[in-house]
Image 1 (cartoon, helix red, strand yellow):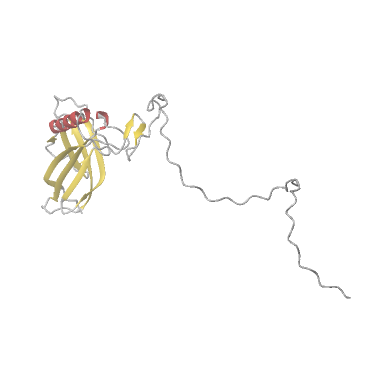
Image 2: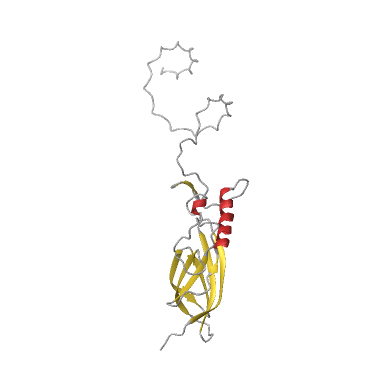
Length: 226
């Protein structure tokens, strides 16, 4: 059974530029361009297609013919009731160094069909989005920024909790002079009584004391026999 050719009922293009934070600080060189391509597919009879379709997206500097300057293939793009959406630039980075005076055109190929015509003009929009993101990334003075972490080169210096985790060198200055002693604080409460110690040795005999006073006369004894 012959395969019915696919026709394009509608294709739209939405541009988005994103600065990646991850574990690195803001940098213009790490701000990739992504394109969100949205479209709809129907067969030759006009019926909406529901299937996973291989699609290839290609950028050219010519409206027709010419060599591609970028290409990205998606093995299976879900198409549901004829509608699909693809983010371009995630599998193969889109260069940011195109000549600003040269237009760019996007070609789309689905299955083994020929490339959809005409190609879409996208160059001006890509460069405008890139310029806006680059300007924002370069100038953050007097702005509140919310990175998940900050790194210098490959070395992380601030973690996701906002703590400094970089090298400690240079963070602490020289020790200052010792300050004056503070006032003495109040006495603390008395501690608990300690255990009684062992008995000490017996002392030497003391000198004899002086004689005491004479005692009182005792009662007279009983009379003896006659």
